[in-house]
Image 1: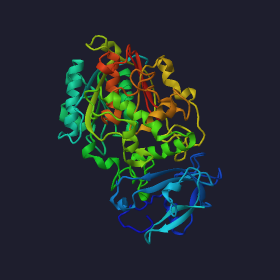
Image 2: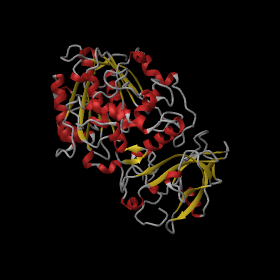
Image 3: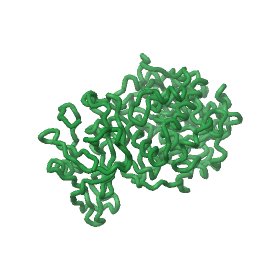
Image 4: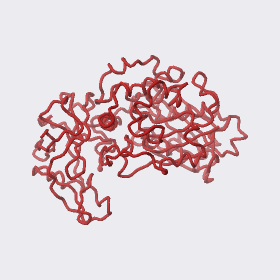
Length: 137
Length: 387
């Protein structure tokens, strides 16, 4: 899962999420942050979902959180992932309160559980794309 | 609008796998069957409400052209389970508003020829500009709606101690129902051992927690209650409806408060607005004799039951034990086998079954004295029908 495979899908950059993925290339988790509410939101959007304001900035997350849910994929839907089966994916609730999707590396799937503390690690999968993943902490 | 509109005809194509018939071909068979059932002709149809289309099948104009229909009203939602209820509701509203006199709800799907929509390379869902909404994320190998149901079930099991063996009561009950349905694709009994030993698709979802992948079509014809009373079939009245719920408290495959995606992680019992359908129908939950729901994955049945307050948050897995949701039980669910065991016709096979039940024509599956049945999904929309 950590090794680069050109056939694996890469993030689709959009005007709303570009800063997040550019942050990942610098090994930072940047969250969209409303300057009026002083709170982050997810997914990245054009406005703050709480106050509908558009005075948004990006602030760095601690990168720490806990697994809020997890799955292990056993079906080869994507040929590029077939060799990884069974592979995990997780939703992680960051300390800032939003939940990111990713996967856990450096731990057996059998050790995954809701509430497991994790922290982000960055995987430079191509010169252009870096994916955040998580490891137990 | 209580009881102002009625279902007067139903029709189905054959259900199966790799059927050598186009999606419009399947739809034509179901439409012909529905017209025969209602003793109507094509020219009587002046409205369409389609639950099909992009990226699958046909759009309304191609359908009208191919079938030789001339209509004055169209509503179309694409082939997502989330739009089954609203497709039916738009038909009801069109009749009630006088925009059309006879509306045909049509769904026709060849999932076996359209597997890419269910996950895979190119994932049209996952690579949308704002991403997909069942938890898909192709970057991490998440490419099917199944992953969203798996995320929800995993957290549900962790929070409430529910087990996969408890969940098995759902597909086992629906398989029992399917064995009584002549239309069902699945013909063999399902045991707890079969369920537990079946391969994992996305842990914690076993194979038998996932809907069938089949081909088929179903059509429902609606008209005014007044006209229905002079037609040959027992009218099945639309007693009350409520719409799909959406917002930051919602994830399509989880009850509110489960904590999936950005949902708050604070379980809630249904509020008055979540149960509006009962008041609108003038029929209380205790009077519902059968429950029909979009069972694309078996946990969705638990979530729907909790959502409408048949049991409390986290209680669904234990509530469905002991035959409670089987025919003869307290609240039979999806009595023709649903998407899990009859066929995946986007929920319309179960809506046709509700009509058969309320006409008293469900044969060995008949709920004795069926007067009021509820369609309700885990994303919160609902239609109560009565005879």
